[in-house]
Structures are given as C-alpha cells and as structure tokens.
Image (cartoon, rainbow, N blue to C red; front, side, top):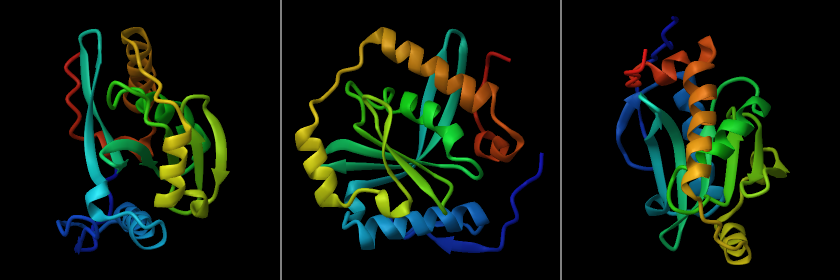
Length: 188
C-alpha cells in the first residue's frame, strides 16, 4: 500500500492542532476554511476527524468522518471527503448519516475537495452540486427548521452499518486504504 507523501506539518484551521501536511489534508483544510469563512460556521460548530465505530456481527472497525457540523447543538450536516469519484461515495455517506445518533443527520456532503454533491439524507436525493452548494449556516438552520427529525430504528441502523462496512472496509479501494490503516477489524 502506498503511503501518502508528507510535505511537513500544517496547522488545522478549526482546532489549531498540528497535522501531517499531505495532499488530502490540504484539500480538507480548504473545505474547513470554506466552512468557516464562506459558510459562516464557528469552530465550535464543527467537529473534525471523527472516528465512527462500525459493528457488523463480530466485525468491528472505525470509519473516518471528516466534518460534522452542528446547529444549536444538533448534528445538521456531515461532510465526507475522499479522493476520486464522489458519486461512489453517496451510498456509504447516506448510510453513515444514520449511525451518528438517534436521528438521521439531515444533510450530507460528499467531496473530493474539488467538487461536491450535497444530499438530503432522508430521501437520498441531490440538492446541490459543487463546493458552493455546501450550505451556509443560515441555509442549514432553515433546512433544519423545515426538515422533521427522522428517527433511526435499530433495524435501519443495522442495515446502515452493513452498507458502511461493505463500502468503507470490505470494498475500499487502494486510494482509500490509508484512511483505514488503523481500523480495528477483529473479524478477519
């Protein structure tokens, strides 16, 4: 597996944490900068570099989530970054939106740092394309107010976990391998 080229160190724009300076991290930092400067979110509204535990039967792993944006303390939008095609990331990202709490995170953005698709999580339909389609704080507040909270039952969560595991762990491509290099997969 090819390791990403590290150019040195950079500072995370949201948390101030030092990070390895890679091409992928530079693109993530551009997304973070957009969330802060163009979309109007505060650093307190953005959680970065989350590791989401996934359990499917006896199999266990952690899947990275790049950004989780909250509005008034409620998870309102998740952003999943990955190099390459963003269309192939729709299904696992929509499933992941069902695993972050008792309710579906209403907005999902999938991006490769150069392009993005913004999806309505409940229906899975595209509501915007391009990085500029990532909602501003005001637009996300309106959407959250207009969208009823959709609870996730245990069966839906189980199916979502299977989808995430299949796409992100079992079926990940070589470009994604470094994202999961420290996943805890005890089932293999």
